[in-house]
Length: 178
Image 1 (tube, one colour):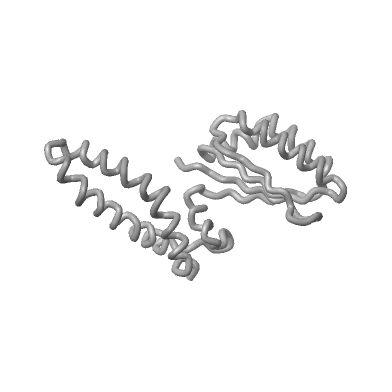
Image 2 (image 1 turned 90 degrees about the vertical axis):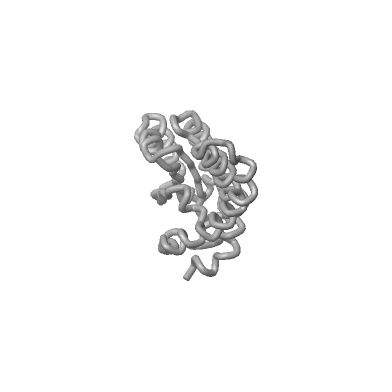
């Protein structure tokens, strides 16, 4: 199962921005104790009258659903209603898909085509895997195949995720946006 990210947009009533922010931070603190909680943050409006943005990340959709349906969550939402007459707007993403929004790509309304995302990932995996196979496998000649593959993937995945993919997404943003 994949991590999920929920982004909430909501405007506070005029003059209630400070109270809204305090309550929202309290709700995020309460959500940090929920099962599967990974991360959350509150982004205040740039200028008065704009929306607050709340980002919450949970390990699975089931964990997020459990938090949303909890009594604690309902209590905090009731408190927030006292300082905001505006209904919240929720967006839920598969966290891996957000990689493709890091380059300024709009998600939604239309994420990049899956084949484009797969191609960009392949552009990173092919040279990364080739590098490790070429330079690492000669040293691992006497090791069983499965152990050799385990070692290779333990090196390839973090290299891709933290090193290669962020740069590829920046460089190939033009291709993904088409």
